[in-house]
Image (cartoon, rainbow, N blue to C red):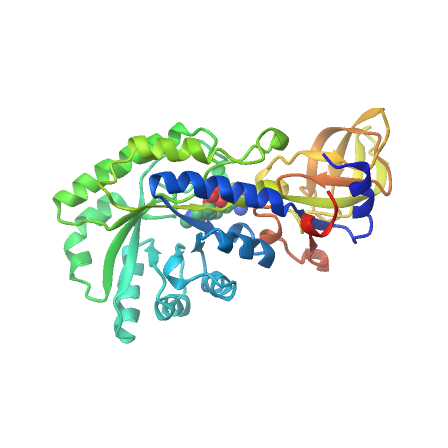
Length: 387
Ligand code: LLP
């Protein structure tokens, strides 16, 4: 909730822009780090969620490592001052040059997603005269009970190595001289709100560990990925996600046998600290009677609603009207799916009002595009304005 004064102050910035609440980011990291410490868990930040340099410097201050999905993400993490020894790199289609770069930079582990990829990493590492630490990303065949667009752990998914295939190829895996299997990696999906899913994940990991152990394949660490969801419906009720619950579940269900357990959270770290501030350009009523509010942001700044049908809470932060109306809030792009909310109740909204599209700190700016040759949105930080 913005004070009237702050909302007016935001008018001095050109819209649309992302507004980041750095003190909420710190609170979130404080919570994640303090509970993780209790169990000795190792945290990586999934940098794909947001690359903003100021956010990265705060995340780094809290001692997290980084989970990367490309060579350029590794470069971005290194340039932001993260240590190579805290970087993991997953991705279903790593390019040769990205693999070479990751090996040369001596990152903590490449999380490998197929046996063909493992052979390639082995041969590139051999050409560099290196032995590359590997996390084997195993597909555990679990339904993470989330939007199917961001579900990555079911048997038919493109992600991870099918378990049976791994078991039948163990001799080959062991024969590779320039890779060292150090970790087991899993990531079953994103925006997971039904936390019991993590119990199933632990049960799967326990049985895979036991079974592979009996075949002589052991792991030094277990990386259970990210996925902890946030409250998009009522962000004010849950500004800091429930790290304590997910860690408690993992602690009581995972038989890690003393191995370090790693996590890779993106959304849970940054979603709630960001909002997209946009101005109302026009009101229009369709021939069918639908009241549109046309704002100056679009799917080019925040793709999630158009791509996944994702919900983001919207607030009019400048209207003083007591009259509520129901609107469709739509963007400027030449796409019919460019709709932020089909039907939202807002105080009477008109040209010049500022709207806040909440919980957009994760996968907002990082997925922005220049479609229609829109400019990329700027970032404004709470530290720089009075709140
Ligand atoms: N680890 C791996 C291997 C991943 O692929 C991801 C996310 C994460 C960790 C972090 O997951 P998180 O903690 O943020 O759930 N653009 C979509 C989300 C795609 C997530 C991709 N992978 C969205 O806007 O909802």
